[in-house]
Length: 179
Image 1 (cartoon, one colour):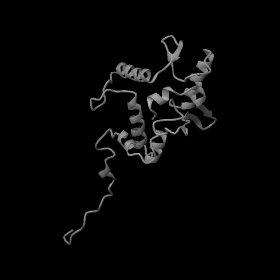
Image 2 (cartoon, helix red, strand yellow; image 1 turned 180 degrees about the horizontal axis):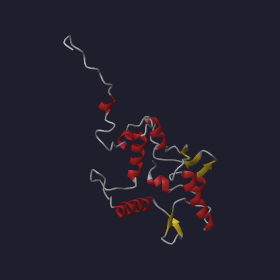
Image 3 (cartoon, helix red, strand yellow; image 1 turned 30 degrees about the vertical axis):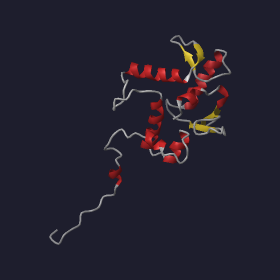
Image 4 (spheres, helix red, strand yellow; image 1 turned 180 degrees about the vertical axis):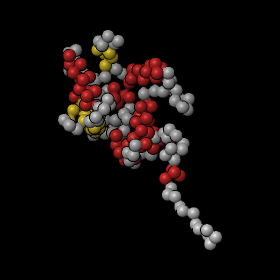
């Protein structure tokens, strides 16, 4: 749920694997931390293909095997597996759009072109759909704790499923004397 510019700026020491827990990623400053107090964001270990520990350690080990032990985390990798230059925020967006094009989904259901920024919104949406609190979503995305802007990133995918009125408890019909 991070901004592409902030993600592309992360350097190798910013990511720390915490055994049996997950990965911590350090952000020295951000749009909501202009005083540069810094903040760690955690990505808990998972028991599936989305495990950040496995993904990061395999990637970090590939960088080290190529002699890259300093600098930015995100790098270009060509079709032959050669690791190249660091990625910019715009490169991250280009990659997301190329992947969307390859998958045949250049636009969302509302006709909006898919971009890296959509990863921020989809992360917030999926977290919300799976019961994460607003406070937890704001913390993970590094929105201000009282931000109402973060709520705008949560985009219900179905107007019926999860509808607020579906949460209203049922009221039994009143019986009449003729029942």
